Length: 341
Image (cartoon, rainbow, N blue to C red; front, side, top):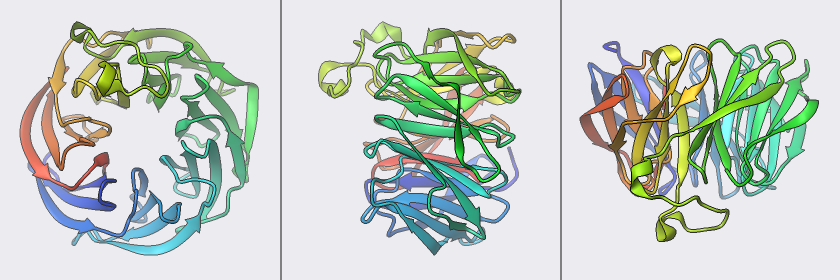
């Protein structure tokens, strides 16, 4: 990837978003945008150069205009959410719809977006400890992952973005696994979920016409040689040396699923076969301390990882399931979310 691009990194520990220029395999920090208290998630509308950031104090969603030359983010509008802050935000239907979840509030929302202004929620659903949400590529369906209830909730989105439950409304994850983050494959016939407590990737087949999911199989995404124990809700994973899965993203060609594990600070790549089945990660790279969030470049050639206990990001070249460290760059405290723009 040699063309110039931007990379945004949320630094929840200091309430900021860093903007980097990514060019010729190197990162250059352009700006640090402050005043975004507790920001640990954002979604980017690249066509309109708008960023939707979850913030706290008070909790809500802030719309920011992105200047691609300076990297500056300028506040445009705000939606207050007094019942809880967002922990995951995703856009749908070309940026005219927004989905979000609140982990602490235990609710998910769908909202309309007009000229960057996010409406009051059109629909609200409730499940304990929701951790992520994504729409299907066609904007007809949405999937909400509940860590607290070990399930994925599945909905159709009607013309007004109301959430209409499928039959069944939920599909189970293994008991006590703590499902956390999800991705859909390019063909839209599979959904993959990373679990926090068991460190597994769950493979669900997806019916593209009905949107319904069916659990097909699982595999490990953490380093099994490190004697990590199965975690439980409310436990301190570092104190007990428990599994602590975090983020999940596809690599190039959809044949690898990269995942982070925070206790041993690793990145590993699960293999995805032509039939969608998954097999365990075999190679692991130690990265930033407590690596919650990361992202791959659109061509899959580079990966940027953040660490909740680091003030830097790591930039890697990707070759199959191996990573070559190219650069570490200063970003800010508690970095935990990163996106190529």
